[in-house]
Image (cartoon, rainbow, N blue to C red):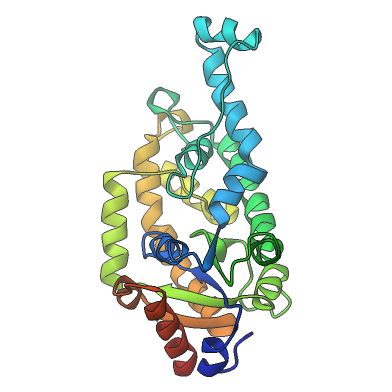
Amino acid sequence: MIYKNPEEYLNAPQKAVALFGMSGLGKTRTAVMLRNDDDWFHYSVDYRIGTRYMGEHIVDNFKREAMRNPFLRQLLRRDSIYIASNISFENLAPLSTYLGKPGDPEKGGIPFEEYIRRQRQHRDAEIKSLKDTVLFIEKARDIYGYAHFLCDTGGSLCEVVDPDNPSDPVLKRLGAHVLMVQIRGTRALADELVARFEKDPKPMYYPEPLLRDLWEEYLENEGLAEGEVDPDAFVSWGFRRLVEYRIPRYEAIARNWGVTVEAAEIEALEDPEDFDALIAEAIRRR
């Protein structure tokens, strides 16, 4: 770790931290709190994915949909309208919408192999965006003059790394420049996230082997053909399995590459001083 003890972290003139864990446990809320203090630069991996590496894919998908409408089709072909993605740190809907859900096209689904293709695009984009963390540490300090840096990773960080490999290219690069901090939730919180997701299913990233296994299992269990699958039903069913799959991988990243804080501790933070004290305590506990 780049900080060997709590004092080294607290006294560092330029702190650098990366938060990781399940979506919904407070990564972005904490990042916004720090960003509002003006001393911390907020680097969002998901925002970088949606703008730098998948922005063109997202906009092209908008254009495909627009071309289905005769009125918009003519305007688009004559360059009379401009279509863009209004993605932001707080609104990543254009990215998740592009990923889509497999299943019945009448219910908003896309073919499974197209879903796989977009998942692969996301994987490549996430790896590149995670590696770009180092570039933005330099930009935050040299261009914008921020003292401290926070990397807000996506929930699928654990899917694109091998936490038990000391030479993993993503974790090795991150570990050399930021303190990796897991936000750990309880089983009750995990159940709450699943319940919340079931009420409002969203597109997600899955590791391809797991996704293929889940898809085949779902089709067999439900006795459905690909085009008969309710997209929301499948992603809701798969989300719990994905959460269960990710938990030990997050733990392995923290065990081998960083420290852990509890979701309740993150929720209790009120200002950057609280954050620094919590990170120092996490280093001491390790």
